[in-house]
Image (tube, rainbow, N blue to C red; front, side, top):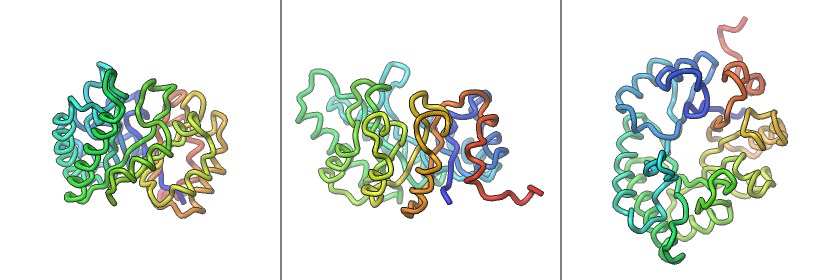
Length: 265
């Protein structure tokens, strides 16, 4: 049976962030993910996880100045030092939160930089991060993102991600496969997951085109979830979608995939 984690960046926005842990647990989630832990002390987040019986399954590396438009810095030769400092910060948080993997948003293609310099910088940065994270027992993921939502994002397809993994040459670099992003860019979801399963360490879901709950758009999610289960995917599936209303009111899609709760009688 698929295992689902609540993405606290996207879900439960009717609550303050630190109250979203309790809300997710109340709805039956046993795991959470979110984009960035860094605005909060790691000890505070760890206490929330422990209090509500939640497992932290993913967060991102620092991605630059999000408010200013940064979506990662791994492609920019001028920011290599910032990227490497971020790796250390991510390791500290992931260790404190017992989080087994972190995702790298590689960023947009920097203007005015030669293509070979961008690629060399990205490969060098990911090789460094993969090695440092491996020492700490943490997996490194990269996520292809659609260029409709983030124009100019450098990593936008699974073929590109495969070539990147090959170029880095690390056994500690994997793909975060976001069904929403990859449906926008390519489609062919189940066949792609089947082909890439050995290097997919995390999956995220939302429906297309509005990025709302599974079942609200064009994707046949019951078929996708059954296929993922049949293929033997053992990782978590992050619920990274925009609720159409209150998060709890829109979770009917999830009920068939959750184990029966002991207090339900």
